[in-house]
Structures are given as structure tokens and as C-alpha cells.
Length: 266
Ligand code: 9MG
Image (cartoon, protein in one colour):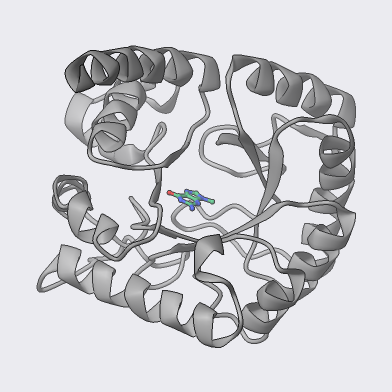
């Protein structure tokens, strides 16, 4: 899953895909084509930054950023266009514009989001976050982080099914970096099998995140090796979908892992 943030303030690609306050559709089209040629099967389009401390945007602003991009990408691209949103009106409008998946860092907990998602019939990714983006990194705390994240995701999956979302259309995500310290993130990576035990495919987003800085001391533009290492570790532990900025490099690493797995099976 390639990341395309249509925001001025995302931590890694903030401002890259905007021309003034409008999405730069030509540049996005070229980047989407490059990501697909490199192996992306899903493109995740977001109009509101969820980095720690990010300010919320209005519904209209989110619609203005996301919808033209969904329309352009879903018309001429082999990949599924996913929309990273928590907002019911954006969920509905994105589905009408051709989106093929919903990615919600709030796991469809916003008022009306669950019903809106169910109405679209689209696959949904439910992510765990402790708190909200404005404050989530202020002393996150858990007794048993893996158990608590697993319990939360299990409850949200049940809520989705109760709302009419087919179990086969649900993905779960531990939400690396969302209300978690480095120790919490590492415990979740080590314990990924407990999330797989819930019976749904697991999506992970580790690309360029600050946990890499904590482990390696690298600035955001220098986290490729860390991102690929974490992507491989997550894939080996059973993650089905990796949300990444560097699609070509990650796809190469996954090809090597797949080749090894083929030999191991023989
Ligand atoms: C939008 N977004 C930013 N980081 C993310 C992550 O780790 N997972 C998912 N599902 N979405 C994310």
C-alpha cells in the first residue's frame, strides 16, 4: 500500500502533492503510476494529517483535498484506491467517487462512521489508537499493550460485523506510533501473531515512523533502511498489507522474502 498524503503537514510527504491549497493531480497521477509499476496494489489517499500534534481539518477541506484525487486515480489505475478518513461524509463521497477501501485510524468510532462504511460495502481497515492525534504521544500507557490492542480490535471487528460489514472485508492494524512508546511498538511487532489469531488480515504502517529515529537516530529523510527492515520483519510475522512511502524498495525486499519462503516450503 503506497502512501499519498494530500496534506500540508504530514510528517513525511506533507505539502508534496499540493499546488497552493489544491491537489496537484498531474504529479499525483505520475506518482501513482510509478507506485503501481513498482508493485503497489493499494494506494492510500489521505486529506488530514494524523501525525502526533496534528490539527484537525474541516469536513469540506478534507473533501476538497481527497475527492479529486480519488476520481483521477480510480479512473486510470490498476490499484485499489483506499481513503484514509474518519469522517462519514468523506466515506460516502469517496465511495461514490470510486474508492475501493476505507482506512480509518479511529476504527470507525466517529459518530455515523460505522453506518456510513457499512452502506458503502467497501473493505475497511480498523486501526488502534490510544487517545487522539493531538495528544496521543503524551505518556501513552498500557498494562499489557498486545492484549489491550487485540481486545480493542476484536471489539471493533465485532461492531463492524453487527453493523453489516462482511467479516471478509475487515482488516486490523495495531497502529504503530499512535499512542505508543518505542517499547509498546516493539512489543506489538514481537506479538503480531496474537493479532493474527483474531482471524483477520493485518495491515501495518511502520514506514519512516519516529520509532526508527529512536532506534537509529535517523532524520525522516534517512529512514529507508529502517523502514524496509521493519516492513520485512512485519511481513515475516504474517502482516498481509504494508503501508509504505517507498514502494519500489519495499517491493524488492518482499520479493526476496517470497523467494526464501518458496525454498523453505520445498
Ligand atoms: C493514516 N495512517 C498513518 N499511519 C497509519 C498506520 O500505521 N496504519 C494505518 N492503517 N493508517 C495509517
